[in-house]
Amino acid sequence: MPDSATIFREMFDKMNSGIAIYDAVDDGADFIIRDINDSGLRITNTKKSDVIGRPVSEAFVGVKALGLFDVFRRVWRTGEPEHHPVAAYNDDNVSLWVDNYVYKLPNGRIVAVYDDLTKQKNTERQLNQSMQMSHDLVRFIPSGMFIYLFREPDGFFLLQANAEAEKIAGIDLADWKGRELREIWPGARSAGITGSCLEVIRTGEPYSTEDLRYTGEELTGAYRIKFFLLPENRLAAVYEDVTDKKKAEIELREFNRLLERRVLERTEDLEAFTYSVSHDLRAPLRAINGFAELLRQKHFDLLEENGRHYLENIITASVQMGELIDELLRYSRLGRTSLNMRDIDLGEIIAEAAGNLDSLLSEKKPN
Image 1 (cartoon, rainbow, N blue to C red):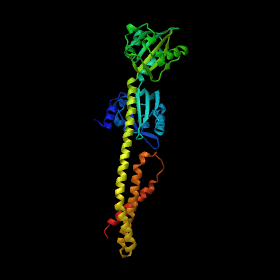
Image 2 (cartoon, helix red, strand yellow):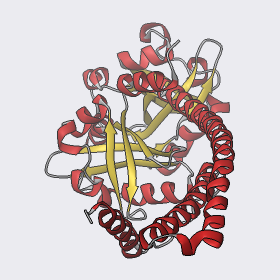
Image 3 (cartoon, rainbow, N blue to C red):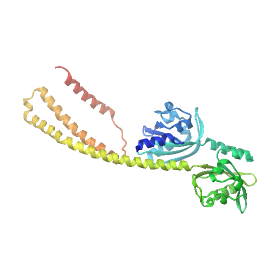
Image 4 (cartoon, rainbow, N blue to C red):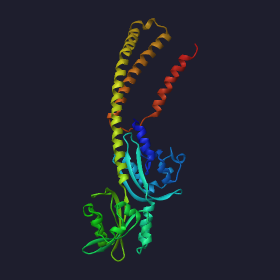
């Protein structure tokens, strides 16, 4: 049976959505790109060698103008996932409309799952630019599209549908043309589709749903729908089936929960192992320290100068080893505590290390 890492890599590589993984640096001042899947490279028109190991603000210079960089920071600080809605991204390498979901992994890394919605936005632009659409144009729009005629008070009656729309609804236009919306989608009212259509008729303004969930007798799924008012009381509804994407998000959340459980198990194992090892190390260490102290107390004057120096080194080293054991125990418990960020004086650490090296080097010099 494949392990979790293998399952994750297969999901990562095969997903149609772009996925990028980042490490925060300098307290969230930037985010280093650690991995990106093939779909992500295709969407952004890049190569791994161009982006892996680079700050996102350099590899994708438009990320701040997009507003996604601020989302990275918030998710990294709060741990709460966020959806960055469809927005235009531009740099010297690529120009596209992109939809982002950002998550934080248990290990602190940030994951962005994104889709290129340029085709869909182009479709919307076409609809806004030309309200008078021909039958052929409707048939070849890449997203699923229905054209309804509104007749008050009866409702919305199907006039046209392209092949993708027929596929989404599981209908044949020839059989369903002229039928009312609720016949095609029996759950349209409860799902909010009918209300959205009426809102567009009332205001004349385009309207979009956010991952609307629909359940019918033979059709269950998640959809994003864009509604546009056309001349002569006609309404265009552009459908995107996001069922697979929602399933992938659920699978990703489940996988994250699995990772969290595995990390907790590994932390508990590490703590138990570390406690056992440190306990076993303390007995011989106490003996070394105890006998060295007795030697210093009772026979120090009998030793030559070098002997006294060596004895002091033994005592100092035993004390340091005791501190290391204590630090090892504290380290094993880090997984159960919150991260405490603070400034570290590296100069002091370097000076201590240099002093230890000088002592070792002086002992190795020939007399």
